[in-house]
Image 1 (cartoon, rainbow, N blue to C red):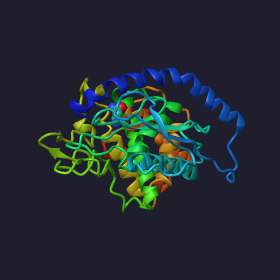
Image 2 (tube, rainbow, N blue to C red):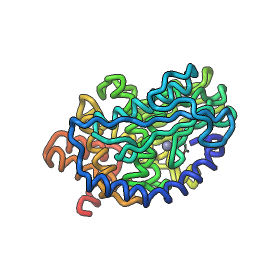
Image 3 (cartoon, protein in one colour):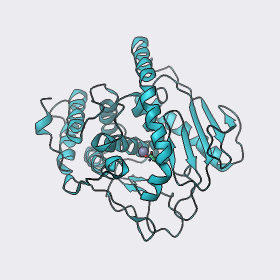
Length: 339
Ligand code: ASN
Ligand code: ZN
């Protein structure tokens, strides 16, 4: 993304990657446990275990606990929003995909708000969510948009499942699945079908006066903002415009526009609620265990096609929509179909 944000996020991102690697062993253990225990019966209710901490504008984690699961509202809208959005994200994964929290095994959801001084980002550090307040000039409070919380928590889901390497195309896929399910949490929460959804990530996050509508647009990558201070949204929506760069971990927040737009094309072609069919295909792809951690766009596309075929059949409209979506963003499926 932006140089400025990349700089601010550098340390936590590096720390996060190290933790992601360390967490792999426990993630595999958790998955094995889930496999042994078998799928829960549909009547079984999962319950979230949320803890909201306040860093008091320092950068020490996790900070002071201000709200534990079931406790009344704190009166701090930022802490209470973080609590509510964790709950909405938990409820989405439970209701739609029968997933019990981030790791599928009831992992406690920990968040820290008021992190740092005018900190311009939110992130998953491998263990918990962290939110800055924004500087008020470029960005407002990072707890504001539900899809930002969804995005960050899905980095946790990815860590515990496909564990996509945070570099190049697999990194852009890691970013993209966070946008896909971040957007789906919001769509589900609002009851928006694919044709009603705004397909924006971080709507409401840009400070007043910034020329833009959101951080990213899945419907029209590259159009979310164009501002003298922020620059122009650098996202491509087609392989013809793929950005080769060493910045941003090889363009993870840039080229994610391509798989983001593929998901948008698939979901809108299928119609109805995006989380039900296109979302199911992407969810099975992410969690199904068939992806290499360094999978590229073509490999991921082929995996979505296999998932769609398994779910709906080779000749189904859903499968054809997925196929056409990848073709629509210039990702070729032919070469990978036999892998
Ligand atoms: N908000 C950013 C993200 O989740 C933080 C980062 O890791 N660069 O992608
Ligand atoms: Zn991300």
